[in-house]
Length: 497
Ligand code: PEP
Ligand code: MN
Image 1: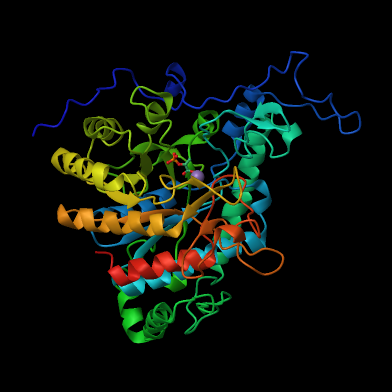
Image 2: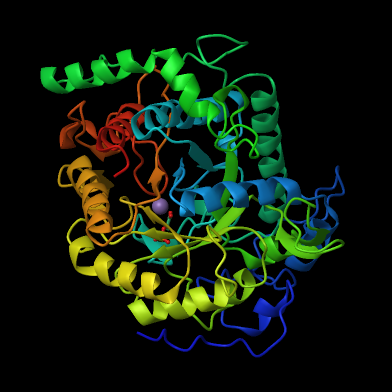
């Protein structure tokens, strides 16, 4: 089948060319000159002037990049390995990262969970794992409802910390939050880099490790499941086999390499284009990635990779326009409303050179729709010749309202496990491959030392009535530590096939 004609972009691209296109999920900043503005008068002591969007964008344009072109290109190489079937992608983190999550403890909990999961996956799949955190910038949220009713009053929805606050009287968008986003992001990325450089990810078998690599299993209720998890953990301690596996990819840039020098890359949804374009820089392409000496490219330096959300992926919209000029590897969320030919046209715009691993398609249909929707998307991509990574996001199509707590969103592990298993099965039936998973999860523990209670089921059999115990998310419900390990064990047992 001939692939549908790509929508050939007619106009030249620049980091600002998105401004001529319709912006999905726009943020309406109050006019600072209007009297209805909530901007307080300048503080008479600090003489601090409240900054408008233009001032903020100008400042962002002068600040240094958060990540480097070299790091971005190293991730791109690792993702090409995933696209070529030689590695698996694990991407995960909070739905909405709060500025308050920028503490050493919370960052370490998040890294520990991703590292623990990747250890299980490497063991089960016998291949390297590329780890990407939804962290260090995941501060903006698209919302299906732009307002909500609180105490009988209609107020703007919480759009993420780089737009507005959680408190009901702090819901007007404030452009200064974009500057705060930059500094929280930079502090988070800095801490991740320093942890990794100090041996945080070292194996328990040696080295200067600071992470408890033990995999606690006390929560597992079913004796059969406990036995199979214990078998996996026991095998994991077979260090010789393990070292031989993780040594395979040594020297290719590290993302998939040895755990003692594990890489963790940063990602977020690039929703706020003012922010993303201000941090997009024309930089020399590192020599290992350049096709000719002196080559330069545009890098979005707010994160190693960014994705387009399911609500902002219109072919003629501002987000797609922005993404088409970037050298970064990028993600595209693919929900049930995506038509197969639309998907191929989108790939034609964002990945015209058909680079392996340039695009990760993050599909999120829901357990009830995956069997109906995924096959046609796989076939269309196969026929198009694009070498994408197919990743499964089993979270966003499976959000339900709790029956015990009206208005509270939750997700059931049954649906999550079903969507991943169906992805594995459908890909294998069609001669394709599930290259990764994209999860909302948290390694956070609450003050009482316990995991959050936001999703239902799993080996700890979390029930509806327990949701209220420690529901901490201000956006979508996340897998807790134990439920995240369940997914890793499940994938590990499936061997990635
Ligand atoms: C998300 O990843 O938090 C999100 C909003 O996803 P989607 O764009 O797939 O709805
Ligand atoms: Mn979400």
